[in-house]
Image (cartoon, rainbow, N blue to C red; front, top):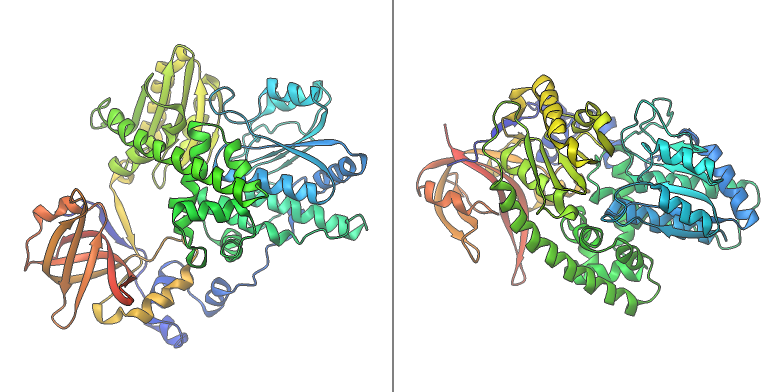
Length: 569
C-alpha cells in the first residue's frame, strides 16, 4: 500500500533548542534543527535577507577577466557571450550580454544548436565568430572541459574567458581566464553557484572596477537589476538552494515579482503564474520547462529573444510560442518514457539503467533519464544512438557521482561534463558497447547497493495539534525551496483514515481525510491515485506530507500535500 520508500528522520529534535528560541514557530524550529541550523546564530543567518554575497574577486582568474573586458570595451572590440541551451545557460547569456551592453561594450550572444553542434564550445562556431570580427569570447555555463577548443582559440587569435560551474577536470583549458567556483584554488566561500551565478559575479566585479577607475558610463545600472535572471537560472538548474545561492534566489524572486522585463512578464502570464505570488516551485515547474523546451525541440535563441525582448508585443508572441513548444515536449516525453521502459528489464547486478536507441529524441533524453531514476531509484543513462553517433544524458541518485562514472570512460567520450547528479555526453557509435561495459563496471565497483533503496528524508514527526494556518505561514521562512533545501516534509503517525477516493480526470490523484480522534484534516496526494485500491477506510495509517493552505471560494483551508502513506505500526 505504501510506495516502498524508507522514511528516515533526518535528526531527532532536542527540546532545549526550541527553548532557546521561544519566538520561533515550534514546527519551523524542528525543521531548521533537522537541517543542521541548530544555533540561534545559524537561525538568524538563515532567515536574514541582507547576507554578504562575498567578494567576486576571490574567484580564480576574476581580475584577469575583468582587465580583459575593460580593454575590449575601451577599444570597441566585439565580444561574444557563448552560452548553453538550458535555462541556466540562456539566462546567463541574457544577463551578461545585457550587462556588457549597458557599459557601452559591443556584446553579442551565441548559443549553439543542440542538434547540429551539441553542448559547449566547438571549433567551427569559433572559426565563424572570428571571421565575423569577434576578438573575445566569454563562455557562460560551459567550457571547463574544452581544452582542444581553447587551444584552437589561441591558434586563430581569439581570446577566451571561461565562466563555468561544472566539475573541474584534472586538466583545465589554457584560456586567458578560467572562472569556476569548483576550482581547488578558489578563495570564494561558496562553490555551488549556478552558471548564471558565476556570470553575475563577473558583472559585479566588472562594474566595481569600472566605478573604481572612473570608467563607468553615466546611468550604469546596479548589478542587482539582473537578479531576476539569476533566480531564474539558479532555481531551474537545481543547484543547492543554500548559502549564496539561497540569498541570490531569494533576492531574485523578489525582483521577479516586480520584473520590468516584458519577456518574464509574458512568460508568467502564459504559464498561469501570478507575479505577486511567485515561488521557487513556479520557476522549477512552470517557467523553467517552457524556456528549456526551446532548446530541446527548436533552438534556444527563441528563449534568449524572449528574455531580451524590449516590447510586450514581441514578448507575448514569443511566450505563446514557447508555451506551444512545451506542450509538444510534454506529449513527446510521455511517449518516449514508455518507449524507454519497454527497452530494458528490471535492473540487476550493477543497478544501472542503460537505454540507447535511434528513436529517442536527443532533446529530451535528460528528461527521460530523470523519469526513470525517479521511478526505479537507479542511476539512468539514456541515449539517442544511430550510425551518426551517440548523444545522451545521465541522472543519478543521492550518494553516487555520475560524472565520475563518465570520468572512468573519458577516453571513449567525444565530450562530456556535469555534476554529481546529472551529466551529458557524446561518443562514436562503434564505442557504445564498450562504453556500456566500462560504465557498468564502474557502477559495480562504486555504487553501494544500499543506496538503491528509495528513501524519504523526514524533517520532523509532529501531531495534528501542532499544525495550523500559522504554522504554514511560519514555514514560508524556508523559501525559496529547492535542491538541498526542499519543502518541509512532516510525518504524523497513527491517524485514522476516515475517507478516501481517487480524483482527477483519470483517478490519478488520491484524496483522503484523516483524524487523530480530536481533529480531522483533508489531504491530496498527487499521482498517488493507485494507492486507493490498497487503502481501507477505518484503518490506522502514517502520513508523510507538507502542510499547505488552499484558497477556495474566498475561504482558506488547511490541508496536507501527501507524499506517501503507510500502514501504522
